[in-house]
Length: 237
Image 1 (cartoon, helix red, strand yellow):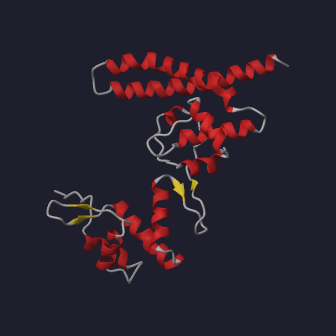
Image 2 (tube, one colour; image 1 turned 120 degrees about the vertical axis):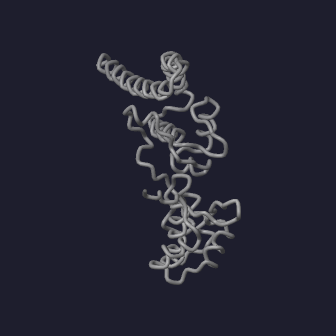
Image 3 (cartoon, rainbow, N blue to C red; image 1 turned 45 degrees about the vertical axis):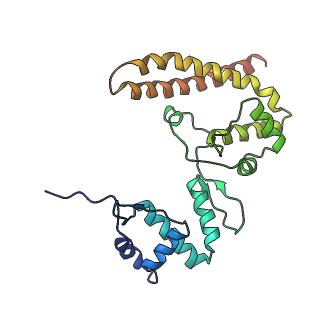
């Protein structure tokens, strides 16, 4: 009978995996990086460190950044925070990180409506990445077109911000876009009318089925909206 592989590594095993690429690394060095907050391995009840593959990848990133780019730990820590929030760290020390997710502006296939983005942006990062200014963002928030979730803005906020910034080039302001929010809310309500009864059904598959229907209807509604706008423009010619 085969024994399943453990989902974690001891500090000695981590050292063994790193030594080939980083001959100078030591257990003391790994403990130091943990003390500095660059890694945070779990602990067993008896206090032994449990390193995951994510911890190992973070250590490789830290050690490579020190060796190849001579980055100080403060900058490396900032870069790790950016990566954790779905950003690509700047190649220039002190430069701004940028969103690295390719589907921010929406592929509208059903599966994309069910995806949870890992992107988290601060206010200044959202302004820089979207092209909005502070007044525009404040106005969008007052109309409910963009909302902050906890301390950060997500990929949806960035997609809305980018679209509004592009429309602003044509003289369209945030106050003109409240009808978009109202229409979207009505479409969400229509989808919920269909999915709520599914969620109330008993059975292990009911939630999965509701999510499948929700994503499919959302995709169809976006296609219908685009088709109606296109048809209206054609009528006006």
